[in-house]
Length: 280
Image (cartoon, rainbow, N blue to C red):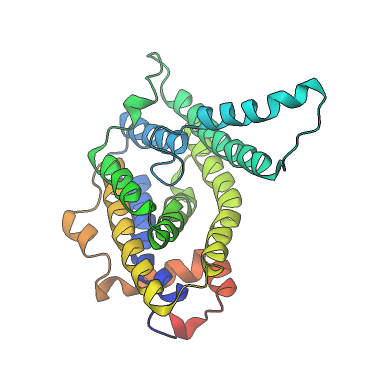
């Protein structure tokens, strides 16, 4: 395999995605898991789905603002006049906003199952974790550049490490408990939805026809974002990994964990990128 390729960009960040998987499996096996801890991770995830966490749109973009934009674009059609311009971008935006609203709504409903005694907080108050703020700023910093924009797009979802981790921990959850049952359901629905999006992001990046040098820079940026995303994920779950474990995700001792994650959960992506066992 060439040193600087889309495949190498995947391999460079996969250790951080595998560590996100580790966070989820440890969290749901922990005797210290509580309703407050669940509210923290679910609430922060709600905020990320509502705002995009720096992946798309201007800084103040939300699911609601995207839907308002679509409504403004289609409102003139209510008069019965055929639009003088193509509507593909409007439909694409609506489809994307619908996906994000669905992701937000399922987490919102899970949050209400967990929190039954106090009024729901504001969405903004759920997004104050320092490492999460730092992740958003890092993505916004890189997004204006073509290479940075590719890396930011590839960083979304962290290889689904969180949700594959929840799926792996499903046997540790009590399916007679409505919260645990919905946690598993949210993970499975998200995986079903986001595997398609993950493939699409890598195919879109591959279509950019970047040079080896550009892929090297993309890989460097993606790795930096993935590292920060792991810091955010660890904070979201109560710092269940030590700082040394977070910073050492790419160490040789963790290579088997990364390889197992790729084989077990991202085989569909490896196949699409033409990768096999010898590439891991």
